[in-house]
Image (tube, rainbow, N blue to C red):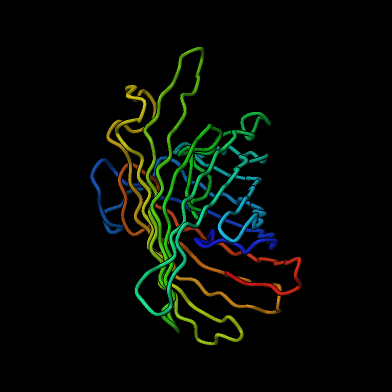
Length: 289
């Protein structure tokens, strides 16, 4: 997952992710738990490698860019397969941290998050996967092949050996086009809350439990009526256990699986994922986030 904190000035990181999705069930128009899921008309299997590069412009300002690929295999109710492999979308990210946590009080770090998504998948001719989203995992999630602008607020608080972090993100879905008609989909809200427990601080060995929600809304900031996607919106509530560890002064790895706990008008899926992260600092001393 993307860090909710930022790099110090002059520090850079490169983080390759691999997100995947396995989905053979779906949820209906009412929010329900996994026990009430039903067989889906489409079975979906996908893999999406992603690379994020971030750099600390100052001790309070960070710039990032993320690009991805995607491969998916979808089988419909007649047993016919649809597959495609191609380029994903490009994200430009800016983070500003106006507030740094105080170790002697309850004050957390607070960071403002801005993301602009460019639909490079559509420009490259990559087919959109069923459901309209790449594998859920990297938050904030946005629609595949569409422009989007996201604003968010994140926080982090260290309470050794624990760490608590989270955030809320609102994505404005820019109007699209289909067959000469302007299309409007609902805006998106993502939330996350993460509890981490460091078992070995020197080695960076920790486990964490993350709670995520993902909602497509029934309205848009521009006031336009929705004419694409679920008219009643959709919801995903997920839980992800994960393990992270530092295996050198500059390298960190993490592996986890996001499970869908409840949903509405969406696919029921599991999302295995892993990542590694390389740090570099012009001073020679890396500060891991």
